[in-house]
Length: 584
Image 1 (cartoon, rainbow, N blue to C red):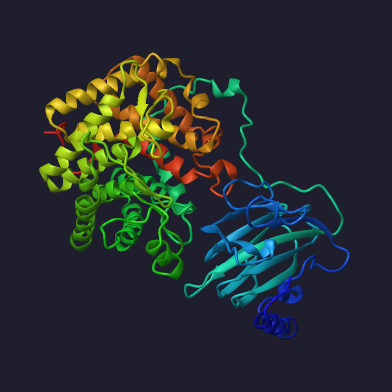
Image 2 (image 1 turned 180 degrees about the vertical axis):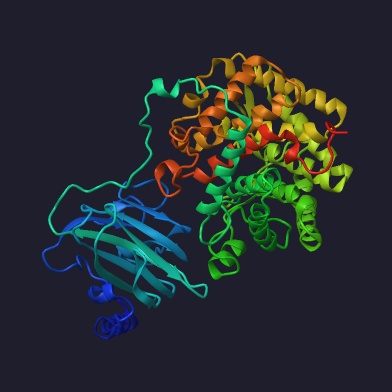
């Protein structure tokens, strides 16, 4: 590949790093070599175990390399601790360096063929269009490279030898002063070819018989203990950049924040609330001039990567952002004066400029902008989310127009619950509805959540209509009575659906709190609690699973929904700010 003359000079300068690099920072750094990128850069008699190309599958993939773009798991590589995302530079002719993983502070985990013999690793870093760094590279908490920068168009190979711990190497790349890294590829070499160890995963290794075991009744103390366990998991799994979603989706952070807010009340733990406030402060600070938000965030607050996401968002929609607006309303009663005022101002501004003006005559809401396209037809998820958001905003403001809009949205949702309990669902990308079975919680969760919120704050006639719709759903011929026992039912085929099913306990306990005393529902709720409390079973559907592994893609989301369910069992009214129609 031909390179421009300026790049040649950069590469020549980089070559001097190999001669001049100061290795005194670490005793184990003596074998570190930094040089201009070249293919097959590991020297000596090492055998290549694998190369990871941080990009998409396709014809340009490096021969023999594994593609990893973060959208699906690869059993030999993962990232943990911090947020990363794939970036592509079409201007780069080299397929290996064209795509890369970008981040500010994260740990790359690489599987090896040994638990004791040394391996050799080569990391390729650089970006065709932007300078990167300064970055510090550590392996097993030992500093290998104290400071490294790459210029735009410069690609460097960092080669080092290390002894694996538990058949893996953990490489921590940490940037300061709002710097960022771009990692294009990683190669691992062994002294002799051996079987490559996979990174451990949970896997659905339990038999269907073990999933069907009746776990029996769980005590109130166990429920409270489970809530604390789930909340502590969220705190310990928080990305280095803050908030609670490695993906950067605001809606995935919204539910952990709710769990933290409610757990702070029920467990009398103020630090949980403070952690939630820190993320909500960031959310409020990233509100756009039009009163809306990007559906995503990335990186450290106020740094270039974060500002870029704010200024050029791929999505600004009512469904994703609405989940955070609702969380903001939930936090208002517990915030202090200045913070409370800023939260309330942001929530009202969003409602007045983005939500109310876009409510459709039917009472439904569209999604608006999603991945660069505008959608103005009814979307059931956006309608459920905004019904809840507006009900919560009414609770903290007592402005009747918010209640009226929430009621209109709820009535649309009630009409969507057909006579046999199935759901007439309006997708975001089509104006044609389809019928969903009652256990399709991936989409239905938001509809039921919206109805339960409006049931707290709607007028008497609307509440009767909502109760009838909820009765149709929960008494459906295709409903709970026909589902497998919770431990089996929760384990859906895909992690996204499983994570939502972890939230069914919240929905069911809130429905029972309306006065339903059906023994079958209560028994199913008890079994659901037992499944979520079982540490051998819960990780299969994401609860308390490792967020860096395939089963844990939605671990924080699933764990927070499970936490909300436990909190709802303890005190159903704890979620709803100020007084509602069910309380004197």
